[in-house]
Length: 293
Image (cartoon, rainbow, N blue to C red):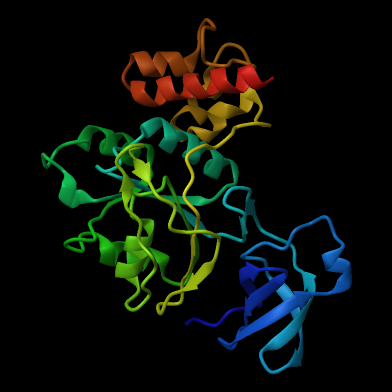
């Protein structure tokens, strides 16, 4: 494992925190009294100052300033987010993907889109048009399969030396991918609920997993709903990269790119420069934000 600059929290259980030290050792810590009384929660991924009190035991003296944090999953100091969907079982939900991309863009994280279960595709070019939509925007899209290891080496390389968060719906194969990436990891793998059509939750809590190539990966609990509560309606377009620049050319500075005249975003949609699927998902999310106001 590459050398860490600061001790980092990799797991929290029952008021105790496992902290990975720069020398590669793992120390179980309790927070100092003032931290226990603080309203600010210690998160997995936090850089901390540790005082050693005994062999493999310590006290978290302080939490260093975070460079970023995600609310759900609750994890700090992430370098990149790997958003995982599946080609089938469950079918890809593109609105869910755009919702998740908006929240990650708002956190200013680098994004990798991974579409797993390539072996379940009925036709080789199925979903290729949608894949091209996201590649043309500028997202790094990886196609993977844990059956024949397609894309696994590429994904492993992207995780090297970085702190990454895996996120996406349950059942898409996040844990299976990590088992392929890191030999001997043996994370529990769930199955798809035939009645509900979605995955069973196999990851119960956020934990940073050490990889032999120097990376740390948060295998986060599966989830199916993400709220945009608190997001300003006139800021939503900023988290759709293909809309952000063109929005500056709109006639009105507060344009919501819905029904306003001389809207540059709508003009780009009409000209085929913005994918209709992305624009429709933008309108769906915009309406959701407006209902919550």
